[in-house]
Length: 548
Image (cartoon, rainbow, N blue to C red):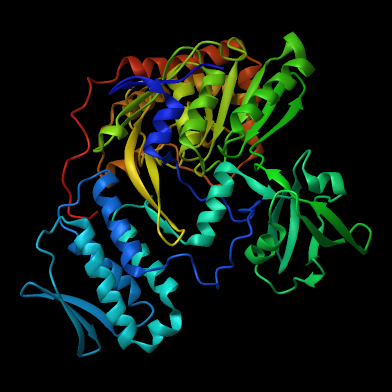
């Protein structure tokens, strides 16, 4: 595996740089999974420190320090916070009058606070926002009934919504789930989903305690530690299954195939959710990559080594299926890229904070450097999946097949808050090795499956469309900071799809079995890179008013 370095403001390992900046790529990592495992309090129990002032001052200070664009006026963020809270009590509203922030409930003034002396003083605005929220709760029975945590959630949802689509607030329960998906913790190793008011085991992780105990995919969870769980939310059921490493849980399931209930005594272990699965398809290795967490690089390495051992020198290629992959940890995506790419740039990031400007490189020692590869994407492929796909495409290592990806070409930093929640803030934007930014537009597949009827027609149709494909890819690589209209027009060239059709894999197999077709498709991306423009002007702008 290649050793990653960071260029720019002093060289260091990619892992150390990411740790210093506390960066993660954030995307919706499905609740239907092995959620965070700990013995922490349920969401209804008092939190460690849910002080409105401490949380909001910390949050607004973090926006000032880390957000990708400097906020020159926090007034719009506070206004949006109060507006969001008004969803809990429609009588609550905020006006700014003659240097004061005036809070109303209906026609009655319930609080007035002076506008902070500096419009760009984040902590001062955070404190002011907290004081306004306390006054609102004192005056509003609906807000008191909702409770401090819901009011705080509404306020920070409004604040982050004013920033951009990828910045967000996670309450303490969600934050524990996020940390588990990123880092792992104690659990039993099952993936569960809700189905017709039941909690169904969808996958049992290989080697995990649940597998050793005899749990099977398709089992319906009916009890945890002798407590029936019918009617309970899935999140609560999963929380009951979590606990300290080494502790024991009794999980009762109904097994439809046997029409009976079974109780399993399972000792919890340290679990990192599975993100890599391997399937042999003749002389092709199909590797499904569902996310990027602490275990992803080693799991991918193991999958590729297993494929090499099983298939041997006759391997026609590797299909890396990243459809529906929402992303994950930045450093793990870079390390994963190092398994597949020899020396060169993987990713460059640029932002306002000095630590956000980085260049990540892969070292020597990539696995299977001469084995053809296809990366399959769809409209739900985001973040770290896009990093990997863009690097593989730009570096001529893989043909990208499928539909245009999500377009989350930004890096987020996670800020811990005093209440054990997290504030996720957009911190920098990402550039592919060739220098293009895929934020909003996504990564364009070389072979857009929507334009091909079936795999047998691929060679002829791709040749027929050669000029169109090269022109489209060149245009994609030249775009800089497109308008919303331009984004829509570009994405319409290969519309993002939420589906994962079998045709995607069939086309990938066809490409891997035709060396001439593979080389031609690789060349289209190379041609587009050759036509890229000069380095664009510095980005982002250094000021902002909190508006989008």
